[in-house]
Length: 116
Image (cartoon, rainbow, N blue to C red; front, side, top):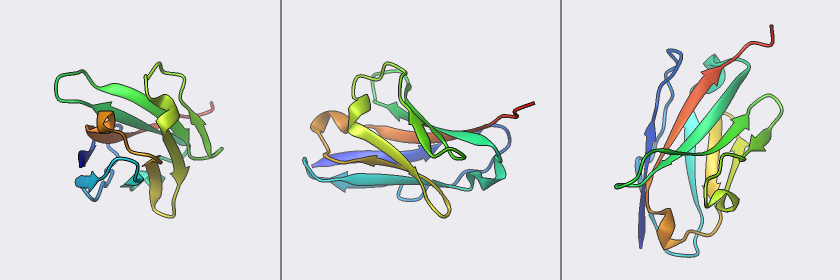
């Protein structure tokens, strides 16, 4: 069984909400992490990070909530295993087929930007 954690990094005074702080899934199953409250980051990107116990925080992907696009060109070795999508209350990170190597904590972070 795989144990993964879900936590929040807070940026730009946004109060992001992550439920299901610990999820357990079997290898080959799917798992999703939700991050809510980023509607207050109008015109924002949602970043998802992976933290393994003995490794530094690694950026997995950036989700553009306005264009509904995923940017995953950050050099994460498992980048093809993850996807993201907008939900009614925020953003969701999904692993379609869990591997043992996905055992980690997953963090969301919101960054507001302006097109000025």
